[in-house]
Amino acid sequence: MGYLQKNFQLKNRIFLSPPHLNQEAQTFLEQAISSNFIAPVGPMLDEFEHTLCKYNLSPHCVALNSATSAIHLSLVLLGVQENDFVITQTHTHIGGVNPIVYCGATPVFVDSEAETWNMSPEWLEKAIIDCQQKGNLPKAIIPVHLYGMPAQIEQILHIANRYNIPVIEDAAESLGSTYKGKKTGTFGDLGVFSFNGNKIITTSGGGALVSQDEDLIKKARFLATQAREAAIHYQHSEIGYNYRLSNVLAGIGRGQMEVLPKRIEQRRSVFNQYKTYFEKVNQKGFHIEFQEEGEGMFSNRWLTAILVDPSKNKGITSETIRLELEKDNIESRPLWKPMHMQPVFSDMPFYGNGTSERLFELGLCLPSGSNMSEEDFDRIKAALDLIFVA
Ligand SMILES: *Cc1c(COP(=O)(O)O)cnc(C)c1O
Image (cartoon, rainbow, N blue to C red; front, side, top):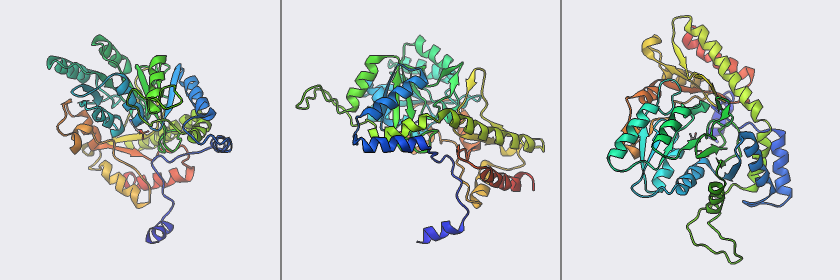
């Protein structure tokens, strides 16, 4: 009661990245329900997978209940097990890292590079060489396209190929982003997407695994359904998982796919509005920095993030901005705290020079929903004006 009353008095909260459903999502959802395929199999699930394949130009795809499951299955498919090393970028969401530990392997964290904020190819190679010298060449590399920005994927693949290490692309945040015209998630041996409630499109919770390799996806589908073999009596010779997406939720996903290009346009427009605003602010002697698209990169701009260095901004910090926005019930959030700084991973190896630590210290994600209204943006600007114009 107290909570409701409090919220009633406040202006509507502007969220960082709320779900944005469309009529088609509701129509397909209702179709799935009325067909009575209320299960992790069914025609809607098949259609959703086809749609994803067609969109990403990836020949094979399996829809799963989360991106975390998709990463886990990828590692299982690549035979990752106890005492193995798996390299990932330290600046990321923990959903891409926990599955390494589920396999009994050790995550090896690599720093970001300043341009894309994603995996640094130089630190990647240093980490590989060091693991190799310990006689334990990493079993997989997991680069991430954070906030929608493509990583330096060509350089990363080049290094991975040189050492013959498979790549799992964590494209959970970057559905629709491209590098030199090719979709992120389709460069690696395996690619992972998320349809969690806060991502650019959603199934409420869900994920997908894509690959050029039909056998890998066939095996993933098998492992995701309890490794059940083709026998009436439920035959099992391997350990499996219950990781499939529900046919009902696939209906939402299929509907959401119809508006994905529009959602990307809307998120990019949000970014451009912030950019225009802060360019004016910067003319007044401030220095707000953005995550910039390098050559050949196209970001879906899932989240707009800024860097606020107090030494270049008259002492203003990202926390100054976050608190000012919060006063008007506007949500913003620091960048992902690097994994090597997380208590749970404090003993894991890390290769870097502090770029990701600096990003965490200075960075702030701003409200970036595709359903943000002009009034919402006016409220955000009014709050920012109190800091930068007053
Ligand atoms: C959201 C996210 C995940 C986890 O996705 P789920 O579908 O919630 O399991 C993994 N990696 C990154 C980079 C993410 O942003």
